[in-house]
Image (tube, rainbow, N blue to C red; front, side):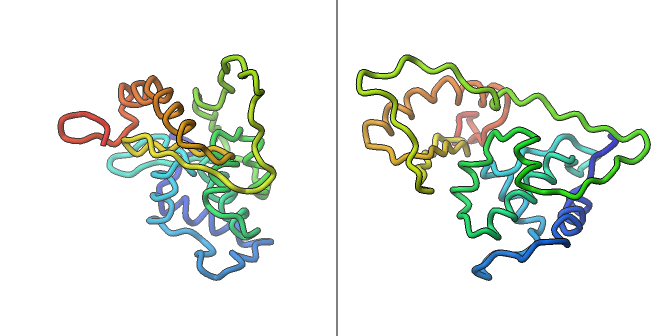
Length: 195
């Protein structure tokens, strides 16, 4: 596959992209350049998309993965928590990621092209009509709520949820979990059910 990199090549490209104008995280507790383990964790938590393909036993990554990782590191350098970064960047378009990542412009190699994979989750869902009290607007703070849905799926929302909200959202997520399970995108137990 043209325009695709192994994990080691991706780490090297991240290092190159962060070499200029990157001060690192302000608290010193976060690596300046993520290693293989950190990138796998970012993928598990949804900060970075799953690999685009395989070459033998090696996972392959593309320009979107690079932009996602560099965007995460830039936001960490600005002092943002991973939860706030996840709330901001989950489902971000390639253009939004590019604006945050500030990757240097590099001409593709001859014959290299990398169209972005279809991302069914990036389109805004149609929502039911608001209740009589009106929709709740996200607070201006960086407070977020995370809901573990099972099978490794986590929903991050930019508002604090009440116990009633938590129950309603968990129930409403059942069709999404079924879709993710059918597509093999959840961590499952030996009997095939989401863990």
